[in-house]
Image 1 (spheres, rainbow, N blue to C red):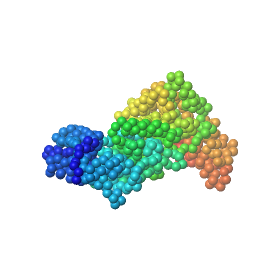
Image 2 (image 1 turned 90 degrees about the vertical axis):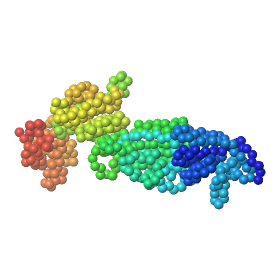
Image 3 (image 1 turned 90 degrees about the horizontal axis):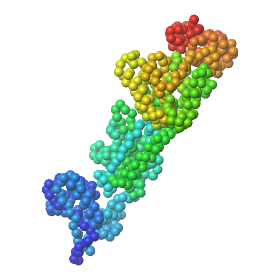
Image 4 (image 1 turned 180 degrees about the vertical axis):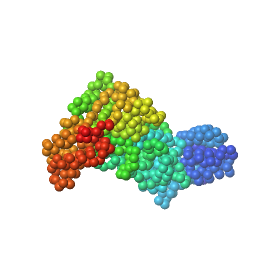
Length: 586
């Protein structure tokens, strides 16, 4: 055996026993900094305890110094007296194994490769671990922590940092598109994750947890999200992507964030090694995510409302897309003056927004549609939505005003937008007529949201009411909230004639039939005439007609609606205004 010589290129890392430092801390130090397994670390601690000191490993000088610095920093942070030193090593030319890859001194451990043994130094082990994920892409895992340990081999958990962003749940489809574009193109591995506890948000930290409650690798679970197109968007419930950017390994976790009483949000968490490179990368990823969600193509230009009822389609998304048939101008039966007001204050206003903005004028708008029930306020809104194809229309009922903040967040994101609040008098009645603090709270919420819009917001408020005289003055009497009130009145003779033809367009209507229907329906609403023409068609079919309508068909329909059913029936069908009966009953 040759004489040992001092090797100036390598150092031994030596642990010294102090009988004070907790064993658990030393084991943790060995696993996190020096890459020892739990069993190997425990055996090494026992050797230090028996011998007073023991060599953890032999490393190249620069590697030894880096490991020693990291270990000493952890010891200092925890306040333990543990002493670790770096000492000159003796190399033995024949007996000590050398690394099969680089030829430097290796630990006494040997690795078996297809029946042959070879020693590998720590540095080459780390290099091999760094590329292990590409080499073993088919390796199976049962738990999340196993997959993360494999992906981040050689990188202790305390050397990783995570950053999380939370997005509204109703933007789930757009988030999925962004995630797919960023991380799903060529990940090293992708896993679905089983969600054991429904109201516990899945995080990167929870995925590193071992033991009885360790998150389990599972088939990827997708849900069809209806966005109003021919095909739904398949959105992932929980997922883990293991990826690489250059030489940097990172992980992405997608999960639901649930909070009782609030809409579920979508969480995107990115884990990277600590340092400037990882920080810059994470910032770049989230910037792309934000830009994609700001573009928000899934719901833009559609008619929406937030889900509040039971969903029977199996495509619950938080957002309902209303597939409303388009309404053309000739299908809106209103007085010419009313149509001119609509054109000037909505359609023409939208067309000159940019010029108004360049002149420093406000581009937001508030419209109040008022009139008796059944005169066509909702139909008019559908007409406006049809004439503003680039606008997103949000329909809010009085029962949903508690979700107003969520609606306004959506409106700002998807602007240009038209925000419709139906029956606004139910939440914005005069304060002296309110019956409790809850009503005033809802009113204040509405006023604050309208006032909170920026002057250059591309948002139009359209409010409807059957009782304009009951509205709170702070809403109806202040420019900047309501800029124009437009009456949607009961139809006159000309309007009723147009409505008879519109709702009876599948019937053969002679002039005497139309004239009789108009004469006998004075004072009724558009909704009344729509129902009247359905009953006229029914009477014609029962009589055996083939689409032709006779005067007795009109008489039978009006008799059922106006006389036989009594005054309550007349009022329910829109044939009465206030306490006055329509013209046919006088």
